[in-house]
Image (cartoon, rainbow over all chains, first blue to last red):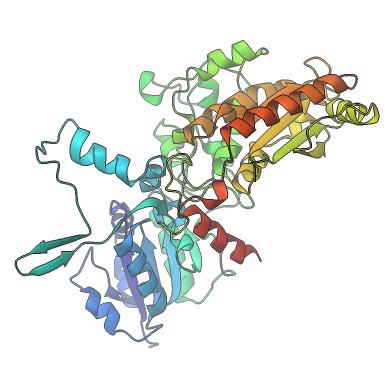
Length: 328
Length: 151
Ligand code: FES
């Protein structure tokens, strides 16, 4: 029998859902174990960073990296794992496009610390203690990784071979990806794998009638009709600007698509595309009328870039970005 | 050196581009800050164009088309009228001032209006200062990396 593939998996700034999704391949996990050896997977088994450091360069055949680059440690691990793996995969929305943590790019470090450590209603911090990267104690100086102003996707710090989108990636797609690596059936470098090249609307079972709307509502405000297009019911859905491949999971639960599979091939900016698509259903022919409809959409940028702000054309909010180009 | 804004002007072929042409052939003097790109209809202006211009060094973007009712493709400009306010609202959340992205209706005979719009927009952006999206922290490095990839 051929030697088993050596596989690593790592989580940077992420929730752990991608790792759970890997386990959701269910009994296929037994087939998986026949194919691969996990040589690094901190969420499931006990490994230390020094185990990775001790590996030869290119030791791992495949590394599934989930999570965004939020701090110095994430970046360090990304660089280390890049060196140690033959194939590095940006696994899940956060590594692919920055994901939910990427929404922090509407703020900067100071604003986030101010809220999290001082203003948040659930915090009591009378001495206004805020984390610092270095601190002197009797035993010497201790250090923690630096928290960045700007969240990045994995490919913004290291070279990435493949992308597997999704928050989290659908289990059947994960299996497909593992099989492709095991059988050496790999597409050209830089491809998005485990997803379609069409929009989610093509996979969507709902009916469209080209109806326009005079206002938008949020998903919790009404139970949508099951077989009609959500946008035409005034519910903001990312489907038309998002890759298919997830199996329309949210749509089938009567919820709108939130865009986690990312932009279609050739699209530079997912938000720009959905902006165009959504504007086309506005029922108004005067600037005032348009404004009235837009008043019902409180946070367009937050909706449009829910999973992809760091990978968008602007990457972050500009007026609160630190001026020095060298600061992270 | 005083700051001179770079403005990208995206003008529809049938009205606004002709209007700008009229301003030129009538030898009207207007500020030279707008770089003009001609499109067939203002409805062709994908929000991506605006974002890309701003991301790559423009301080403002002017979009001009036929007056409502006059679009040569029936309703392209009505679509623009719905799309641009949504884009502007979104750009506000990126910290980009509304004065930097402007939608105007300029007909083929309105050379004078084109001149006024350009002068006024340039003046307003001069006051705002550079957008400088290129040099902001982290972002500059990300851009440098992305460019390398494309090259
Ligand atoms: S042709 Fe001028 S706006 Fe459509």
